[in-house]
Length: 393
Image 1 (cartoon, one colour):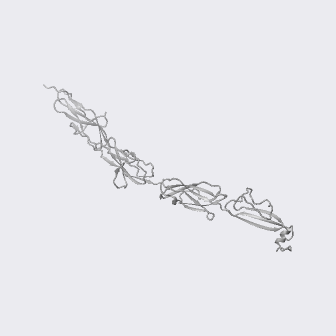
Image 2 (cartoon, rainbow, N blue to C red):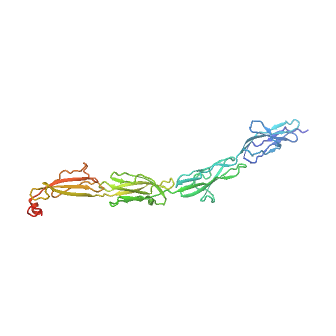
Image 3 (tube, rainbow, N blue to C red):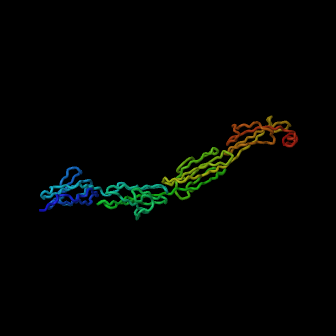
């Protein structure tokens, strides 16, 4: 008589299996002991501790479950042996089979990014599905439909987020290849293309515009001051100069020309300084500020008139002691204020206090000062300036 060990399971199905939808799964069991042939019945449940039902046709030691639907299903196998005293049925340990969606891209890199030279760019991708970890490889090309090569510069070229180098102007196209080694997970997938355009910052030279008294206006093309041929928009402010009046051109933006006219009220050359910020046209790429200095000259001019009248109403003098009254008018006809005004006349020893001054002793533009004084005629004046008979010659 031969006595065999009781029916037992030598090796249970693999405890955990994870595949992508449609991936192949093979569950197997090995029995030992008992007498004669074994019978198998695989069972499944949607809950590990739930009720397990028989799977039709799954009656071999090896079973390949359906993986056409995502989700987690739990399996076990019941093994039977009819040998006398062999223990009846035994049930394997549970086997968990998780079916994931195929590898896919949930969010692609941003389609279009425009940045200033040296600016930061971050391209990122989000993958979903598959089994286990993902591998990433970012690639670049100078043409959107060209050949893409693995990146060798920048940071994060083999991660889900990549920062390309932006030290050269131009347009480069990027994509990322994502891989996953899960069973049935579709191998590699490639993202949509991402366009990165790197713009140049405008640079400019400072300028000085010297006005003249002939023409106190200015019209400066700011684009002509850009030194690296970047079409630009401009904003500006200027330092207010209290000694200068006129149309300062204002604090402005958008215009390519800086225009205005100035009048210098002082007795010294003056400057108005514009601080200008260039921005590359159609972008947010702001260049280094530059200055335009307007030098405004001193433009002085005045009108002096002298009127004489005889005190007794005559139009001439013929007697020693006649008095001639003089009125001298000084008018500022220039744009500059005039100071240190001195009026002298060889016949007038002293003038009466002037009139017309507003009290600041500054002859301002358009202001008029009037000086009056008198002269007493001598016999010598009559003898040398008339005909000697007392009648003006």
